[in-house]
Length: 309
Ligand SMILES: Nc1ncnc2c1ncn2[C@@H]1O[C@H](COP(=O)(O)OP(=O)(O)OP(=O)(O)O)[C@@H](O)[C@H]1O
Image 1 (cartoon, helix red, strand yellow):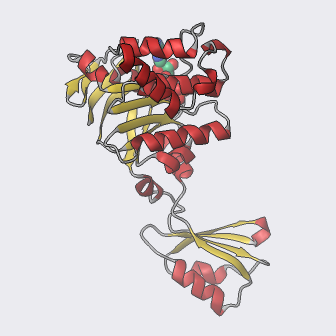
Image 2: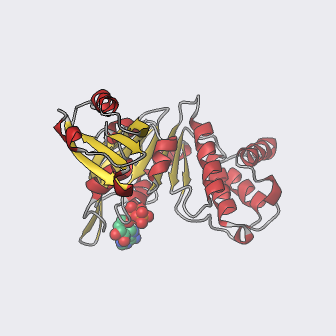
Image 3: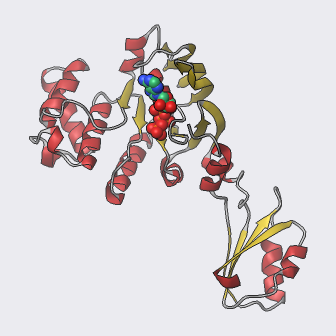
């Protein structure tokens, strides 16, 4: 369990993390979202004991990160933003070094390194120096050092940043595998909203260091103006006036010269059956009719509008 209570950080006059509180429970993959400069990395650095808060507190698996830093760090794996340092080290030696720092020796050290190498598929580059690796492989090395000691909590700062779509997919699959069936906690910071839908069980959105939203992807999507919106793909445009007369319909958006209609519902209203019935009774040339869960990107943009630092 992670518990963050009124965490605050200032750089000079600038309040970067502002009275931030939230919890993460075992088994959760938390997406930590916010625009550039929102304070995500700073929060993660405080949570992992690399930066001292100016106010508030955080506990990881019951250990206070300021007064029981080493115990808390033992429970955590941390992938900082960017690439791992020690660029001139070979991958295998770097991982052995991290295993030694984590207190492993002899056969267990070798076994830990081998297991992490297998999990993130690094076998092909073990004897290559880190600085000569591609960005994707550097991220994998970072992930391998974070999971070496099989921590209960993984803190990953933009784990897929700069990766190509295949590598993004692989890293997301790895995060899912790590979280699946275990009671681990994974916290990933990201600006990529598809990542939240793909891997996260909950998302926290911050802006200027303040909490703006905390909910499951479904709950956040339900806050979208497109929640329960009905999309009609038509062979030719139709008179949309009858749609606007339906109770529960608030607005219609038209694209492709009227051949794609998005019918927006009033909050709390379900309009799909009525829209379907209206299309049928008017014999509209409908190619496709679908209902939306909501758009996370629109919720994110609305919540964080004007929040970019
Ligand atoms: N050591 C520091 N000294 C002064 N200001 C800092 C320091 N570290 C971060 N900041 C400032 O704090 C703010 C938050 O930075 P942080 O890196 O936490 O944001 P972020 O949400 O992780 O952003 P991004 O998505 O761009 O990585 C920014 O305005 C940044 O310039």
